Length: 162
Image 1 (spheres, rainbow, N blue to C red):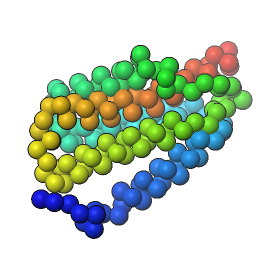
Image 2 (tube, rainbow, N blue to C red):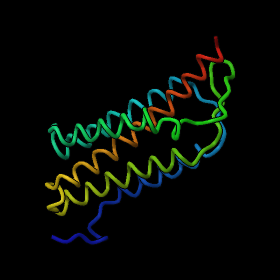
Image 3 (cartoon, rainbow, N blue to C red):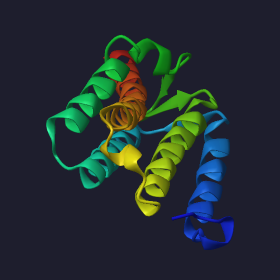
Image 4 (cartoon, helix red, strand yellow):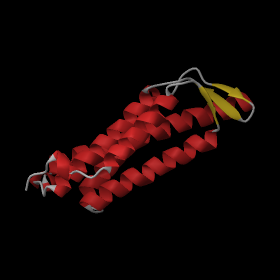
């Protein structure tokens, strides 16, 4: 089965435009409440894990790969994803602008788009362990990066508030 551009639905491109707009907004310095970033990170965690389990089931390989990606983003790679130059202002934290959230959102979008294309075309990739592990780990890493960012902002709020 082949897929052409004319058979693609419009809604992924609407989501892509919204993500680009949201990412552009995050490239500017702003004040954020730690709880807001925590909710975003929790939402990304739920959506990415749901994406993995809905595509591949709750089997060991995809869930383990997702968990390893998530743990890598919070552990060894956490410093890469954590924003720098944070300062507390009242109940909020001043967060410098960064293009990283846009890159992470586009990474999630592209991973999910590739997964949707593979599903829609009945690709045999969906049954290959390397594809399953790569997509699952990538989605775990991207959602873990949002968690690492939220953790850094929460830590800033607690440490500077003490």
